[in-house]
Amino acid sequence: MKAVVIEGPGAQATLALREVPDPRPGESELLVAVRAAALNRADLRRTANHFAASDSSRPLAIAGVEMAGEVAGMGAGVQGFRIGDRVMAMAGGAYAEQTCIDHRLVIPVPESLSWQEAAATPITFVTAHDALLTAGQMKPGETVLVQGGGTGAGIAAIQIAKLKGAKTVFATAGAPEKLARLRSLGCDVALNYREDDVAAIVNRETAGKGVDLVIDIVGGSAAQVNIDALAIRGRIICVGRVAGVNATMNLDEFSRKRAHMIGVTFRTRSLEERIEAVRFFRADMLPALAARRLGPVIDSEMPLGSAAAAQERMRANQHFGKIILRV
Ligand SMILES: NC(=O)c1ccc[n+]([C@@H]2O[C@H](COP(=O)([O-])OP(=O)(O)OC[C@H]3O[C@@H](n4cnc5c(N)ncnc54)[C@H](OP(=O)(O)O)[C@@H]3O)[C@@H](O)[C@H]2O)c1
Image 1 (cartoon, rainbow, N blue to C red):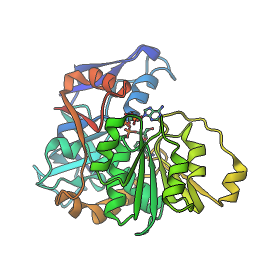
Image 2: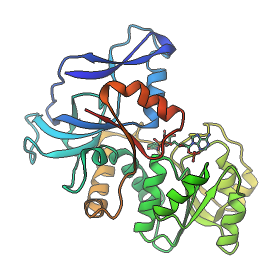
Image 3: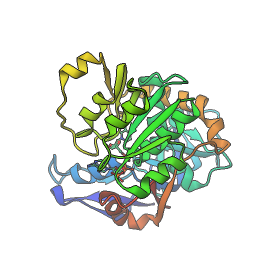
Image 4: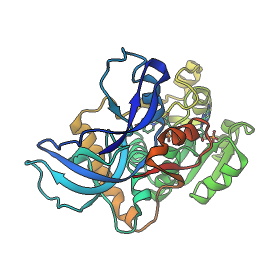
């Protein structure tokens, strides 16, 4: 099959479309004929770091972590699937004509979703759902601030928060044209973090109380704003770090707010924990997704062979929504 592989040496790693051996599903895995893959910020990190941390003898790696496609085969231990079923999932080796994934980690693709929309859904929507409802314990009537509303995860978080009955959703982005797009997704108060005093406006709009929940996809410079915009006993869920992994914050104010701060990632979750996050998402969100009450924003689509250009578009922050690779 054809696949986009990360090629060394070292930190100069590049992406190239190559002929590689077909994957074979394990006992509990599905073999999926990929129709579309979607880019994620983590893909950039992986391309840059795959060889940098090691020597160039490290084995060939297929890029990508998210895709949608049709079931083309399965291991002996898989039940409940048929050849041709439409599925989407967070799955390694997604920039390829075929990949394998544990059958408990896939989400059925509703008829109403295109392949592009399906590929764009699993990571951002499961991440945002997990951050809001499992880590964040969001309740109807609460107020939410999404830091990084224009990221893939932010776009999903705004929509899920509104669907789940958030009273007011605040969200930040870095360009005026993006603020209108955040509003069109259901955001009540869209703020430009480059120009607006985000914490002051949040406090004013909540009558001095602050928000109950912050979904932080920005990190870095957003850390202090999160505390300043938070209600007493509010929760901050650290999802992403597009502005940097290091932050300075006033711990006295953090304590005064009696704030709760929780980090989330899928990188350190066991298979069982990932299965549970996907199961909860399927049970809770699939009907709304099928009815198109929420869904991903597609930025652009390119052929699989243009993966390097697609990652360059993401690196330059030229996109709004998901960049898709057509397989
Ligand atoms: N915890 C998890 O399970 C999980 C899962 C998925 C993703 N993530 C993380 O979430 C983050 C976003 O990923 P994504 O794929 O959704 O990203 P994305 O769609 O590529 O987000 C890109 C946007 O981030 C904003 N941005 C970039 N640099 C910034 C900076 N220095 N300050 C503020 N905003 C900046 C830009 O929007 P503006 O023009 O509006 O600034 C840019 O368009 C990443 O850190 C990723 O690793 C975590």
